[in-house]
Length: 295
Image (cartoon, rainbow, N blue to C red):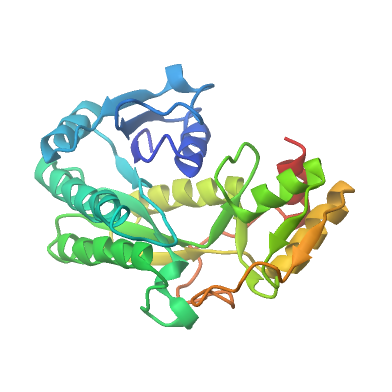
């Protein structure tokens, strides 16, 4: 790959993918204004940021300006719960924007797409059972993609992600909450900790996206492939937190069981699709948790 357009480049995964690609690729990012530079400060001048104003036409303009060999679609809006305030954003970000992207790619003749999906679409390990509305909107995009690939307009690889972590992560993820509590000494209310915590280090995640793009270009037989990006042997959340404290010589005032169990959650690691061929996580949990705390 030499030219790549990333949606969601201002996010944690998208920005790290841009860093991984930069030594060898010309990287473009499709962004809303005002641009959030939280994760892009060190590479802002090395990538080309192209505006999206909410229209299909602006996506087409960005495609024609960037002329990407591969589009990596990482833009999404996530909320575990939802209500009248969140539902319009879930639909706009995860369905409408995705539909515009697919149509613009097909119309402009840029056919290679790598996109992210979520294990939350597989509640209780079923082929399709959305855990929440976010997961349902991600599936809605996947359903749209089926048409474009079946009609021969696009070729795609979907990577189904569980959880991700790494240095510099400012998302409100559980490991970030644990890290803060370990540093401050404050008590942290937690669930019972018995659920599997299927987490992959950020370097391995972005390696999967790069590898998927390269394989898509090299494998004409791939039309609409789906693979998982997952840990080799996930531990429970309680075991993961214990290992994080152990490898970094930290203590935590953990109030296990004080946070109510949600009515719907993924208790066991989901394995529905095969791993991306040739990919496996290279960063051990111990090494990743050490780097995560030592950033």
